[in-house]
Image (cartoon, rainbow, N blue to C red; front, side, top):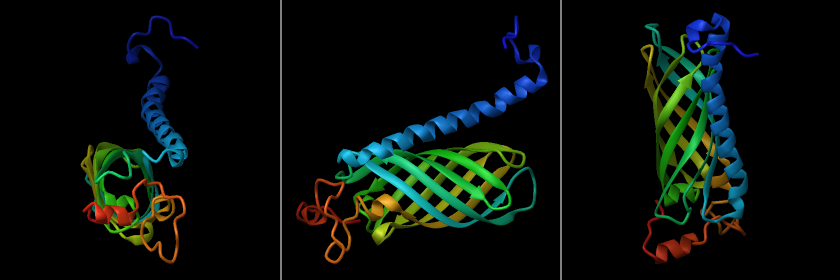
Length: 215
């Protein structure tokens, strides 16, 4: 249905304007997540691409709209792609979904910088920074970031925070597992659990010979 001569939102029915404003950001986040997911599916065939698929849980302390600070359990999922897993430093992007239990879900698109050891499923560090959008409560948009500490077998401890509109801020801790760092890119504990087809062209032993630290 077309609206003739409607050049401003005020010219349209109020319901149409509201739906356009609400659906537009959500559609953008879904499209971005779908694109990242497609890249992750094809990445195992290309050793020049890093990938992340992380799931975890934890808790967040948060407030928004002038309300008292609250503490809620949270579920977290990441999916993303980055540069070559053989690089000393790896750069990429990811989509993150965080669900506050009894509250709702928010989405973030983040840039990531990670060490070689983090991507290889061992000890390492990854830093995330980007933007989030929250649809529950009074809603909010703003900055989101995280410090991710990697451990062997893909285990990750993530300290996440955000600050945005409507006086919103949150900080929390998520513990989880990256499924691709555990399997495809794993370079730890290969003596008892071999990785026959690692995503890296350079093994952990070769990295040590080249003087690259595992973290």
